[in-house]
Length: 401
Image 1 (cartoon, rainbow, N blue to C red):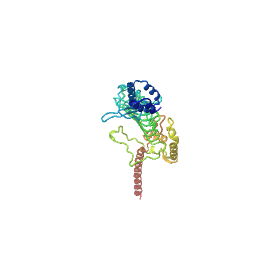
Image 2: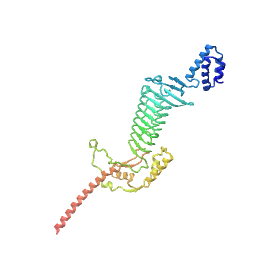
Image 3: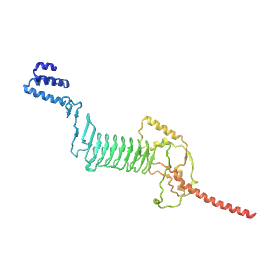
Image 4: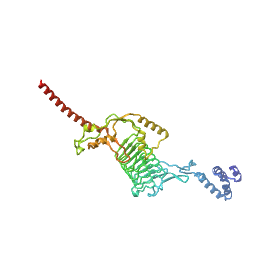
């Protein structure tokens, strides 16, 4: 039925108005027959009121399930709020205690919450499904910013944390002053402070201790509780606390425009003794050439946590490992140097011994300069003695003439 049929049935100006209203309803809802039946069975004045009510409902687009506030036009969205100057378009007030699991804004698709937005007087701001949902300002939670699905989800009392990314910093409970940026970064760290992780799965696999820095995808340690570590690179693994590692098993060169400087200030050195062995130690060293089993080393470092690389990235990384294995190096074997030092009762700081069962041996080649200098000094003393003996022999020979 169209509006023309209505005009024939219902004469007068009311009929004309109702016809226009009816046309809109017929196009938007398909409920025209029922509405027409009601209209025809109403007295004249009630027909007028009924037409006005229908017009109001159309203006707010109720029949199409769209709502417009502050607009005289049909809203093009389910909710359209039009503000004026010096006026907020939308203000939402909730009780102060509403936080976390009952977010201020809640977006649902199907039966699952896909996005939440919440903030409170204590400086917490959570964006994302499950983000910060257990935070409790009464327990000390304050000044946390969690952005991403499940970001900071189990945080209860931690404060001044920033976590941005998918499932980042997810299982923190009471840790504070941490920064975690990247999917799954710092995910299993629960109660520590002053950690910084930037990159996909940076610092992800273990429950970290305090004061750690992870910069780069897959940077990590290989055991729980490590503190004061620095890992920078891609897949860089630190094996013990208070250790810094740069690059990964495939890195072949580090460089810059100045030499590395070790702090060396006598004001901060104690128990100074001149007891470094020289020739005796140097004579026991075994210089060798060797190839690094880079693939084997990389497998060892990642045996507790495998890297997640795309096939393309894995192929390039494997190629880099093979290239490193082709390089012929010269140097020493750390265990041989350790044995040489022990045979002389010399606690040589040039040997970086394993601190845990997950750690590896290393050598600090710059520290070999110290026993080398001592060896040169000892050799010079021997040379001076020999020079004196030669002079004496020459004098004897000349006197015999």
